[in-house]
Amino acid sequence: MNKQFCISSKLIWFFTIFSILTILEALSFNLFNNKTVFLSIGLSTGLYVWLIVFEDILSRTVYNKTFWLISLFILPYFTIIVYLFRRNKLIAFGKKNN
Image 1: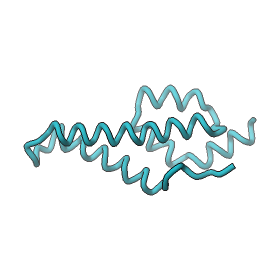
Image 2: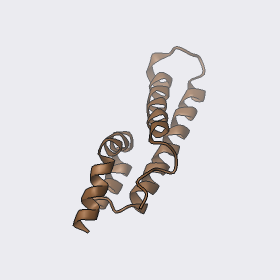
Image 3: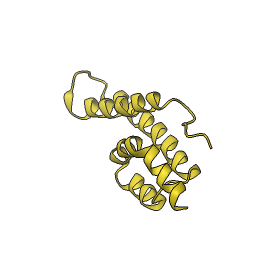
């Protein structure tokens, strides 16, 4: 089974960081006047990354899959970052324990 995302993992990292920074700028930094534009761009990019990670968790044999799916709904950005760091180990543990 291929361990790759449907797109490059570097691109997923870029979209995750871009989404977080765009939402932070819209909520607090006030560098630009169009807060709603930045907020909508950040949230739509975040949703795109969330869907990619959600699909990846569902399609692979991941260790403790239920925990990752529940935490993806409760703490989406934190879960995405931790999952991207631990992804290969979680897949290996899932195959080992399955």
